[in-house]
Length: 256
Ligand code: BGC
Image 1 (cartoon, rainbow, N blue to C red):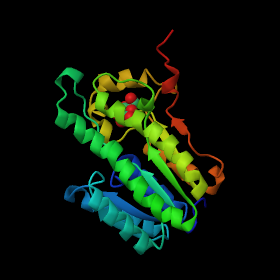
Image 2: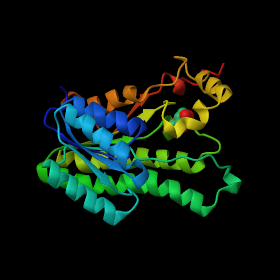
Image 3: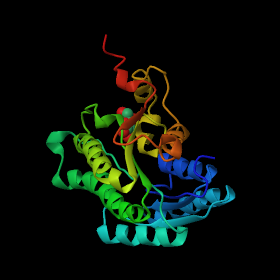
């Protein structure tokens, strides 16, 4: 097992990549705090907690809006208290919504920045304080191929993923002397609820698949596997970089 006895916090862990990641970390021997956003997700979060506990670790669900500073401060301190420390933060919570640039309101823009970028910063800052005290820790941010591929209709989303790149790289430099590694995982198109609008539309799904050399969308478990590795000692020399897990999407297969 890659993470025996480790203590992890996964944000946005009631569904999709976050859920698969929390469950996989549990299978690798970790105790996991399962963060979720709203009451609607409470039952799903509890199901993830039970899955972690079936693997033998402690599971704990905490509701918090990652964009709310007070809520993040409280969540990280509660997670560290209840789990007995914090070795791994997975900044996974994220939202996306297609809006043409010229119709994008400040509210649309700010909502995405708040969750995807400010949320990652707040969780990173608070978790890294705990990790710095212990002299070790790992932060893994869920980025995207849109950390480097522009995506019309998603300017706010792309801005957050590009922002996560330099946040990660700067944090990696600043925190290395404290024994903390920081890296990003950049998934391509993964079959999760964030993509429901594509999964529900056969034509759109086909269009996405035609942009992927491996010819299919990825599964959340394929991202969870990369997080488990990046968070483990096997990746002990990996920091300040983005690990792309995209079936080859970033090879621009349509460019001939
Ligand atoms: C988005 C997905 C999209 C994928 C590839 C991800 O960041 O969340 O909706 O399919 O990038 O474009």
